Image 1: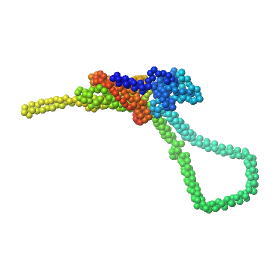
Image 2 (image 1 turned 90 degrees about the vertical axis):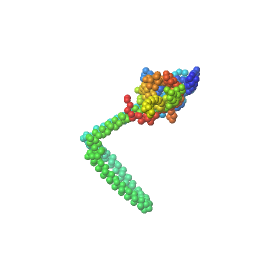
Image 3 (image 1 turned 180 degrees about the horizontal axis):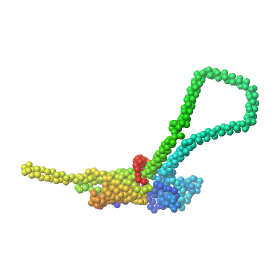
Length: 500
């Protein structure tokens, strides 16, 4: 056991890259943000997508802003206009801090002292839904203005006022022409002089036109069929335009008389009421969409599969061989409706290596043919069948600790999880207090180490080791598993009502 724990500790130190007795390879910087929602301690720090450090602490400043302390490689050079902002790995990936080192022509920041950068964060889904709500409000205001302008006799009066204004404008134009009669006479004199000059130029123009006409005549004779077709097309076009004009006249007459959809919209109070009802329904739909998007955006859904080997588990129970051997497999689901409400739900289905005990009683009665006496034989038989255990708990976050209460392996119990960092976690569980399976309560304690975090095309991979049921049938746990976030199930569950 000591050798195994020593090997596990060595690999933890190697993979965690814990620096013992070394210093000066990193430097510390600070950044101030208006909000760091979703960013946790030990989150990564990247430059151009390359990991260069991690978040060491997050504090709330007296002015209401969030101050983030980071530890980055000393080789990263930051200029005086460097900045930091919170980013996502993909659409719903984990959050990290992206550093902009600044422009090369700016002075470098000193490495000997802690520097403070300005920070920014991306727009949230709540900002998008607020903009959609504002657009719906503007549409409602526009329709209200149209209803106010065009409704009833007052709308008709406004249209008559517009026509009267047009008539006044034409009268003013006529008076303007009369006031500028002298200018018009001068223009006519200029036109007379031009006509006299044209009298001399017209014969020459006529000769040129005659030559052009002769040329065009030949061209027309050569293309007489095409010209005829063009004239025929123009005749059909004029007939279609006449029909269109008649249709427009009919439409405007129906609108003026209050017939048709547009006529009812302009002159009918009932149409106005229906329009208001439709707009109210649109506004209600936008509100419901906003609430749904808000729930889906906050929902976190994690799935996992793990398999454990129980070294030292007895091969038999009450003299009967265990159905499941010494292994235990489980599939589980964790649902976090809203991280801000500090609660989550766990559901797990596991294969019990001990199986389910069945006690059967067989009674056989026989009669002796010679003596006529009867005898009864009672036989007790115990067997074990494969059994599945169900766990369902409600949990709460308390900083690095998680507390869980509910069903554990189909019995009442509770557990505590402690997150040492983003890779190492310790868990303790206690259940079966009613001696359903064993004489003493069932205890389970193990440590879990993350070998690789979840990426876009690969799940998270972890290993774990610990001790199980030390008060009854002690066994040592060695196992591994995978964990990933499922966005498809998340959006399917987004339509399920969740308490606020």
